[in-house]
Image 1 (tube, rainbow, N blue to C red):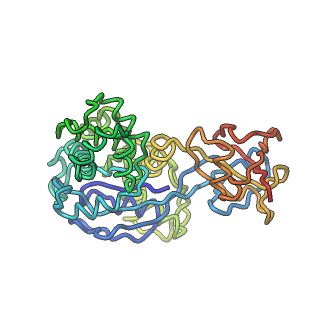
Image 2 (tube, one colour; image 1 turned 45 degrees about the vertical axis):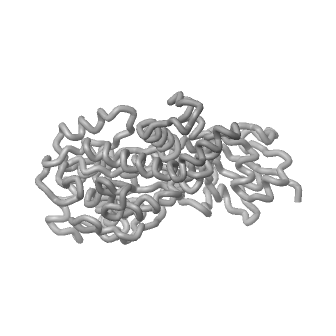
Image 3 (cartoon, helix red, strand yellow; image 1 turned 90 degrees about the vertical axis):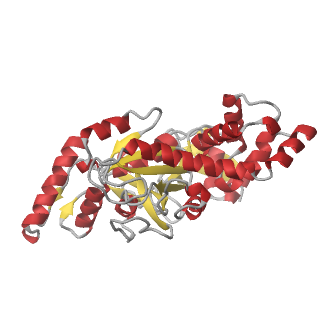
Length: 396
């Protein structure tokens, strides 16, 4: 599972990425600080079943802090995108290629309006952040359209003559972007295009690319630098039709996580407050900075950074956490670890889907599954729910 962190240069993408992963991404106040994509691991939160079962857990592929399971998500922070990137301007081609494998996108926007269209620093309020929303979406749409259009005349005529499914041909062309046939089919149904693809106009192809992008690369908007954004900018961004928009301060989140790692404060990612543990080791400027952060948390509920990732995973991608075990009575794996693993599966996944997620052999040799809460046997097609604890029974 990979989430791409995108946006124009100098909007706080690398700070956002670093806050989620504590990876050392280069950060600077000028465009194209990021050239090669940064990769790291962030975490989304789910209630750990060990609280309900009243058994201490021993996590293996995730973390548990105060009854909250932190489940890993791969993140990629790519080079900033500028207008006409799909034509190769700036680092556009590299940016777009780096995004091919992302399942969802987090668009980092400078809500303060203090960077121009190409990421150059300007006065706060000097740029309309709404312009950044439309330009980035258009760049990705143009990119998808360009891939679809390669040798379009021949492909479209061949489909018409053979009676083949155009959605299959397009999905095969877009497979490197993780685009599935159902996404193209859904887009075609919505647009009601002519059954003769060779007659589709440039505008229709761009609309098709947009619909494919909405289905295959869902996007959430992070209204970053919200700590210094004019209120009217935040309100305007929240009004973007059909978008999930979260005010964020990646700078504040990074400061909190680094202070927590250094033992200066006690802070759990996504929390609405923190405790100072070593006030005597902090100078006046640091204490004042923490107080400003506390005021932001009080006003917004969090820095928004953790919330953005979780909205992307749980709302955009519609994933649910499931906990496989090998002993439903003791909730252990073969090494005796209690509730060791947490996997994220698309809502509607079945017991057999979980078996394949754990290991191909389990899926191939699936016999049945057992719900650890009810101890009932469930079949291959049983639909799993969030936080299910499941034992898979398979042929040896």
